[in-house]
Image (cartoon, rainbow, N blue to C red; front, side, top):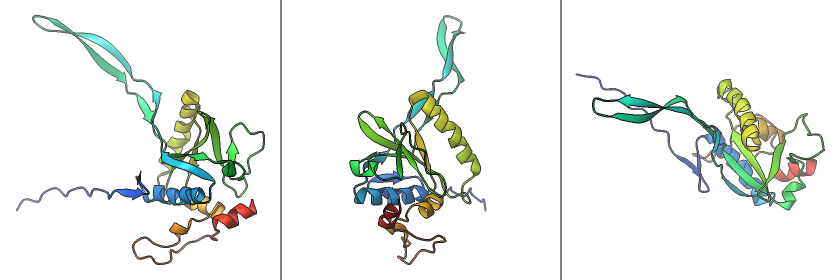
Length: 206
């Protein structure tokens, strides 16, 4: 009896409030963002646009046949594009929250035991972009290192700043969204290794 190839398991589509997610980490990020939105700090959470970082390098050549010659094109270097995960717009209330910092601000960032989101004015709106990575223990460091280079090229080409978001690092430093406190399948209390703070508790500490 012939043994067939095992079919690859197709990952289940994850969706949250009309936004597609590529991982549970992205969904956790949306828990966090939508809780900020629920209290009026941000609005218009969306999937990000795609940006061209490098146009392909091509050249034309002549393909000579018996009766004619055709002009064709070949690629010497492939192009490169990058799509951050999410972006959102700050509200006037959000601008006052110390979590957010204008890229043109002259105030020094809070770095010790804190998390900052850099935002910038784009088209008259105050916009912040997010790139989500999983926990340090579950995600290859290569992806984070690649992002550290990619974000520099995005800034150089388009002047768009992207913030790194790792749930297991951000939640302990800011607040843990309410929807993360219980598991989705059983609704049981999730085991959390850090001291849990609500959004209101976090905002009052700033």
